[in-house]
Image (cartoon, rainbow, N blue to C red; front, side, top):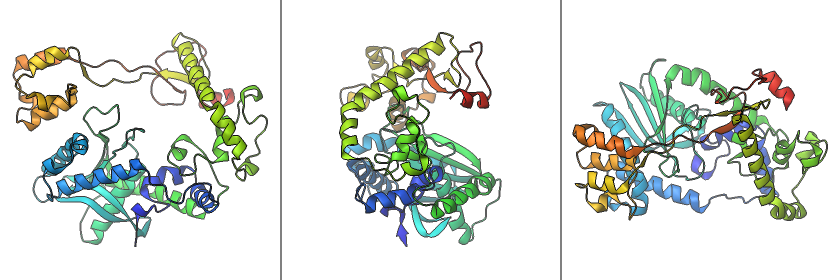
Length: 410
């Protein structure tokens, strides 16, 4: 059987791509055959992620102790290992723990995927996924990869005689310790097995069948479908979708786009040179235009189809590191600095817990001073489409709330 880590085209990790753009798998194969993209797409980052998973797996299985993990990895993996251990403890006795567990994908049982960590017991099913990447923030809620792995694990266990019900709780979490917004906590998605299998699972299976039958011209670009697609850098259809609808005056493609022909267009050397010359300028213009749009809406101007929302809370930080150093005088410097920078509030909480003095058990005076020294700034406003379900920050006269009106504006 083929393991998913040999890049099975319809693997769980690529589900957003092939679900969102049915013909992407066929198009990627076509591009590889033509030499437009490398046949193998492993990078230094993916290899580093593989190594991180290996260290965590060996530690959780007890093959090595934590101190044997290289410091550069332990800095980020320590919290993940703690969280995995906590999940196992919460299930109490009788639970089964899985680390780097291979499972047949439920929509194609001839292919295996690998679950980073899972605990199955009387209280339900817990799936934990380690994301070691720095760049893109990965959300847990509605995550296709998590859903696929959870359903695949359940079907494997059912084939071995395990019993579940529709109301069995399923909790799926993503731990992404290196992302700049990481505050020490995992992203969690909780649902029931019935909802997961009968609704989400069936829709994923249908998408799989559609994509298996699709050819290289059936491309429907979108942010989610394109952002990790192997062919995203050479896909003319993606370029066409990005600029479709813009006025000719600022549209690099100029004029009407032939959607049937554009899938056959290759990005020539001349185009690559032109993009290299203009990419920074184009990117800067669009960023500045979005900034201007945000400012106008924040000032009360109505822009049909767009709104601003709260950016959420920023990461917690210290108001005075010198005062924090005094408060945490019982913690050795080697444990609260990494290497010369004071650890964040979330990281210090882990140190306190590791030393047997968790924050919740500290004296009231300590907690009072802690609250004084921890600050959490408001996030910056964000520009989104008006159809975004999150509430608008500013209500301006004349704003259209109907999505049809929004489409008319565009």
